[in-house]
Amino acid sequence: MLRHEFQPGKLVTGLFLTATAVAFAGDAGGLWETPWFAVVPLVVGGLCLAGVTAALTRGIRRRGGAENGQR
Image 1: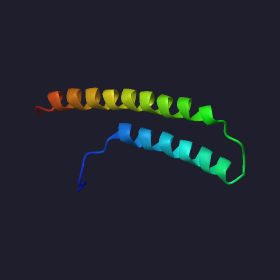
Image 2: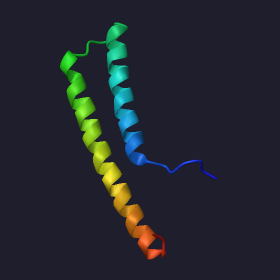
Image 3: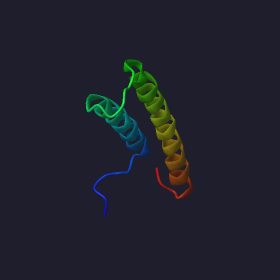
Image 4: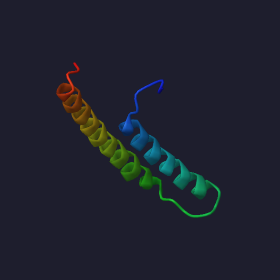
């Protein structure tokens, strides 16, 4: 049994923030050069996508619960 409810929006946020960290870690390690402004589209785009994912998840769960007699 799961201890908590799975939240895909948080997963998307974590993936994008991890990608940002990897990009800057590679830059710090000298593997490649990452411009300082690359963080903006990664973080903002990831947060927007996570918000859309969370909204879709909430809508799907709410509609599914109403059909099953829950809530």
